[in-house]
Image 1 (cartoon, rainbow, N blue to C red):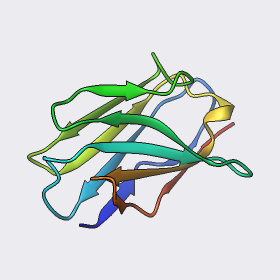
Image 2 (image 1 turned 135 degrees about the vertical axis):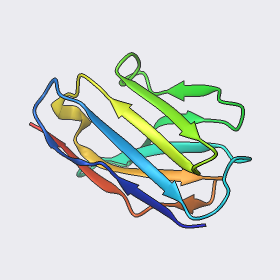
Image 3 (image 1 turned 45 degrees about the vertical axis):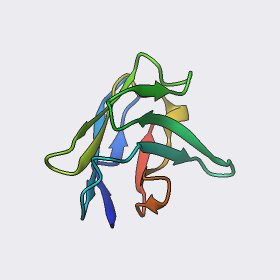
Image 4 (image 1 turned 90 degrees about the vertical axis):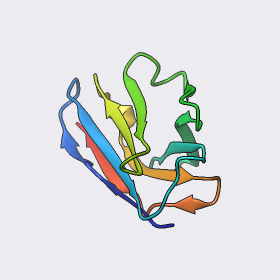
Length: 109
């Protein structure tokens, strides 16, 4: 399975972006997640969603980010609102605990 992220870019603080992660194969039975890595920092879990739709969020994004999935389209989403400069990072998606996308840059200024 290949994962391809899209939707990253540059935005002003307070703005919004929606990331997408398209899978080349069926991932409906897998848990999926969004991770990010800022310059000079380790990778952190931003949000996860299991196959039943239960979600988890890092404390830093609760109330601002929303994860969702469309199993019919094999796609994972991350709606990011009220973006802050500290959200700047490369965002990557993961599926089934073993598949990773190449990442998409999000820059908030």
